[in-house]
Length: 182
View 1 (cartoon, rainbow, N blue to C red):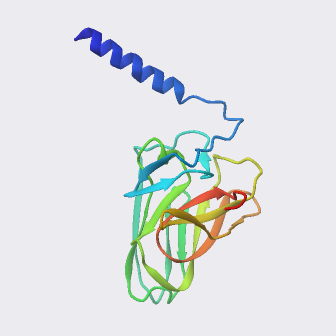
View 2 (cartoon, helix red, strand yellow):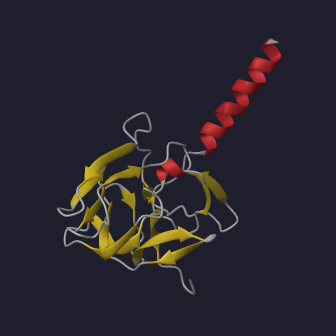
View 3 (cartoon, rainbow, N blue to C red):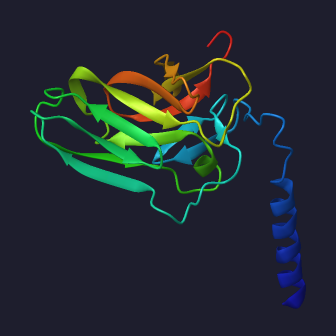
């Protein structure tokens, strides 16, 4: 039994050491690497990554009741959605969920919900760039749908700390490097 425990500890140590890397080089998953996030299997190719692991034991869910006629916002760890007055067809509890696993928790992705909610006026999604590994390549907000990423474009604020774009409905979104041909 001690041999099995020792072997398990050695394997765990190897995995922990394999996770260490030089943060001066961007780490982008290959297109074949897909993982489960918030109930969806997504391709991590080009998805922006935090330099160090966020605190996954902290709050990873936020919700707020938004009165449709007034609009409002929901914010969680720098992820934010701004909803204009009248964009919702009815009063709605709006949510933001961040991944809780070690792979996706380090990526700039979030589920804005309720999933599929449609807006009569686009809402603005914002993503924090503080602590995100940037390569100098153009970046954008993208929506995961139908097994692929759909570009929403985006802009970075003057301080370089926030990436924003608009969307007509809620889904899973991420900050991505603009990939050639895609």
